[in-house]
Image (cartoon, rainbow, N blue to C red; front, side):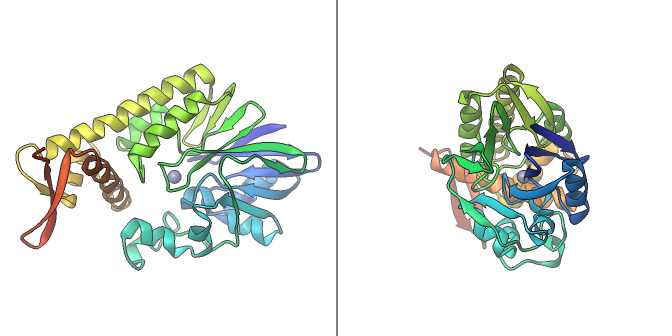
Length: 287
Ligand SMILES: [Zn+2]
């Protein structure tokens, strides 16, 4: 039996297997994990994580302490075991205090790694991990029967409109992940942020999300149209253009997010990075 529990900011999947359960994602904390355990109403033997972000993996240590096996893609296993790698990736160095908070830094977990796109058989239930990398370095969606748990690879339009700039580690791969979701055979999808949808609606959401990502490339082109700018300047331009009122957390995410877009645009030959006057700036490519 496949269902989900609403934790407020996120939805978490529950798959019953006789008298135990598989949980997909854990919320941000032990309190969330306890709510999930209560909703499951039986022993949680297995936790599958879509990705390493703390609002999905923060409750995993609670389940591990209760004896559950915790699994994540082999591309992200090190990040949960050496949990500071997650914040190091976001910051680009050893973790400073402003990153040392539950939103960014979850507890270390002794995880097991799975191979993306190789089916798992857990207590007689077949679950297919589908690589949907892009939002994070090894993001995975899970197909159980005809239900797809899409994690953060797919976002509801109302959440996209609210946040104005959705996070992607690598936007180019996030676009490919949306195509992968469209090509996957499912009848309904559970979206962590947030809701459920049928396949037709999911395809519409995927198209809207593609348009969202493409519009950020356009904003960055505009940011450097007249003159080169550094990463901080481009990030502020894009956020202001989109009407995003920055908080400390949203700025931290936006800085990392925009770097992914700049990397894509350099690879496509649209931008070039140069070291000028003591800083790295991006400028329109002269090709
Ligand atoms: Zn995430």
